[in-house]
Length: 198
Length: 233
Image (cartoon, rainbow over all chains, first blue to last red; front, side, top):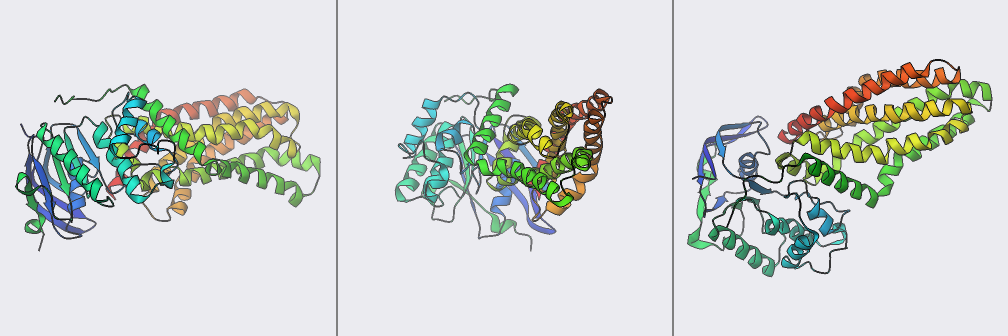
């Protein structure tokens, strides 16, 4: 059973056609990386797959499962502390317990920062607050736009392990990254350069 | 591992969570919420200085002045309503949440109204007295602002949601929502003027209440749709 399948998807931004004929079938256990240089339309495609944008998106996208989409902006309020940010996050599962959230923050190495407002944290730490949603989420499909940005080496390794764990438990991940992928042969790749409109 | 199909879809819970989230961020940056009130205070202080200290003239103009300033300050609030949410990706996540966007938007607007319109209605008697409004007209002022600021903010939220993705959308926002705000201004200031003359206040307040209820039902749907349109830009 495919978690999400895309057939003949085309992406338009403004009056420019970026991509066409994109096809993708994501099944449990899949790990997909979207490849392509800046501006090719990776983020636009991810937003289209997640359902954030519908305008200018052609073709057919069938979504069969709950998704977690993490874009460049992670809906983290600078004025709130990390616990409140996750507890009251608009797209998180309702009925989260404060303890669960604090455990998740400990897993992203933010224990001790529970009462500090996010605006006072470093860029990497703010990123970690957003990534803590991965720990809390029960969504089967993760759509991650540049998840490794701003993370230090340890953070990248942690996220890598988390993604592996999610995939081996029957989840699936679609992500973009400009760094060399750490997942090697265990992942599928979709090179968007082949779908660029000439 | 189990993959639950749906999140707990209790609408009330979703509403409450969004309300608390927005309320907490407003409390953390009180100057944002206090600005419209401060604006109201400054303008009301300036009128007696500009018009001269004639109590009869001021009392006669007070309902109009108070209501025009209330409208302008609500315009200030509307201009920023969804700006930070749009920037930090909250609107995106609200749109992806397993709850209707209209409910989440209504929660935000409600929290915002409590921090601005409601506070304005509560402090209005003070401003009324500053302009020499007769004491017996103060309850009508509070009631009309209580209902009217709801209309103004809900209408403003629709405009804000529509223009949030446009750079410098402030002027467009004013053009869009001012015509819709004018009936509220007419009924609101009429209620207060009637109260000054011991007239029939209740009929005007009933009209305002009807508009507030209509806005409460219709505006969130429009806000939800408008936010989705803004995400497509």
